[in-house]
Image 1 (cartoon, rainbow over the protein chains, first blue to last red):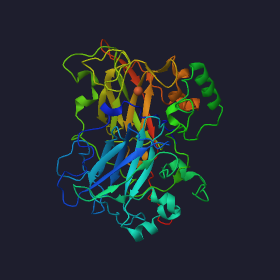
Image 2: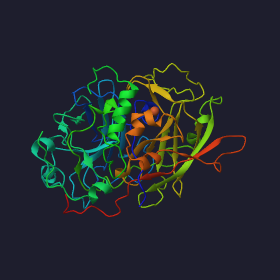
Image 3: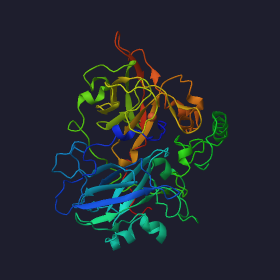
Image 4: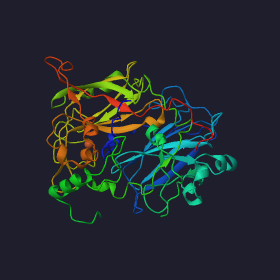
Amino acid sequence: MLELTPSQTVGPFFAFGLPFDGGGDVVPAGTPGAITLHGTVRDGAGAPVPDALLEFWQTGPDGRLPTRSGSLHRDGRSFTGFARVPTDRAGDYHLRTLRPAAPSGSPHAPHLAVAVFARGLLHHLFTRVYFPNHVEANAADPLLSVLDEERRATLVAVPDGGPTGPGYRFDVRMQGPGETVFLDLSTHGLAQPPVATTETPA
Amino acid sequence: MSASQQPATQREVSAEIATAAGVPPRADGHPERAYGPYRSTALRAPQQPLVVSPPSLTELAAPVFGARDVAPIDADLTRHHTGDPLGERIIVTGRVLDGDGRPVRHQLLEIWQANAAGRYRHEGDQHPAPLDPNFTGGGRAITDDEGRYRFVTIKPGAYPWRNHTNAWRPAHIHFSLFGTAFTQRLVTQMYFPGDPLFGFDPIFQSVTDEKAQQRLVAAYDHDVTEPEWALGYRWDIVLDGAHATPPDPDGV
Ligand SMILES: [Fe+2]
């Protein structure tokens, strides 16, 4: 086993290094079935975080993960499954995508995988966006089903249509009341003895 | 630490760094997200423990990047403008591996950095040091069959920041990496050997294990250095394992 390279913060100056044109356009405008996903990233005081960067990775409506390159230089036609969006001065982000479906054999309900980066965050955070209409799949989901109601709600997008069509809101609370559920997906984390409960009194 | 307090002195922050260094480090070498000496962590580190969860099939895969996404010139940051940038030209090369020692092949690396004077091309950078019209400071590369990468750039300068009074970042290059699984995602910073600012910097010191700190520091490599052209540095990067086995459907 090799020792891992430690994480360091993305810092405040990633704007010319990471965001790219069309980073929030997982599908082109006008794509049938397109939805918008948007929200606000807030810190422990409830203040908007204007220097966060969010990445999303997902299946398409066919339950498949894209296997072709072109995630940075989109061809204007294909579903790439990948979005990278910085928050704006108000802490808001948005992207245009398609609803995900679960891959065959997946124990998990349809979701988007999310990575959150920010100044002041020494190691990125993983979370997931689930959708409220998958009632049965969500109830059986191995993650959602072990969370209490309040924490589970932080992972479920809220329907919030806009002038451009159907939409969902997914806010990220980095700390404090309503703190988003963040995940340890590491091989190291999984090697630890299981924790009896994930519910922690506030 | 509330943001309304007076900025601390370096002496005070160094004392906090020394205290934090006495806490047993995380076994995986990563920093704790709540790290007092780095003030901005105070409101941005979660208070709830992370929920340990087997990755989903989505998280066991990753977005695909290739020749369509990255041009060869993207890896030479000295050739993004008509003229040569000022500063010390350097070569930074190495391999990307996973925890099992396997090369991370054909995956995206992205870097961004300050110029030789310690100034970023970013509206938020208020450091009174000159911008270089011939240097932007962003680069991309795709690892080869052996997980290798190679950038040509300029050695970045140290720069001040507002964490505390007289706070300076050691020279560093920001790195962003993908593996074959989204769970392997890593954003980090590469440092240069022997930097006198290491001991003063809360971000470098947030990695409290000394051996883990050394994994953030490139090695000068005379075999990488090219005569009459550029000094060479070697830096290998190790991502988390790729979770070779699919998640247990009965697991949590
Ligand atoms: Fe930096």
